[in-house]
Image (cartoon, rainbow, N blue to C red; front, side, top):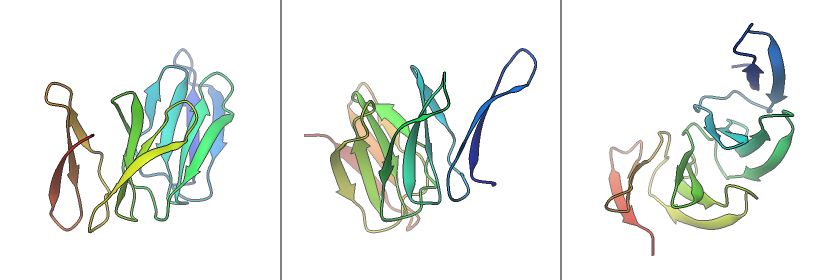
Length: 133
């Protein structure tokens, strides 16, 4: 709630680093490789280096980010309160594509690796089933 991501040492619980955002963080952090990804209510998605705690990149959406990020199809996927599902390059944060839903996306999407289908829920009780072209 204080707008910070904290990393602690598993051995003794001491603080390794903290990375601040400008608003609260409701999304679950996603660790992949040497990065941790988070969304924040400040409308940004962040990639933070796990060794240094320094930001690798950040991407601004047009809405608060409650949804937790997901890695699928060699990209980072995350929904926003602007109703968009963003596909970002996981290494650089560059926008690859987006899907515009009719309502806010506040939960993590589900991806089926076998069928290559994305399932995107919205707060309007809609469930989109998408396939990337």
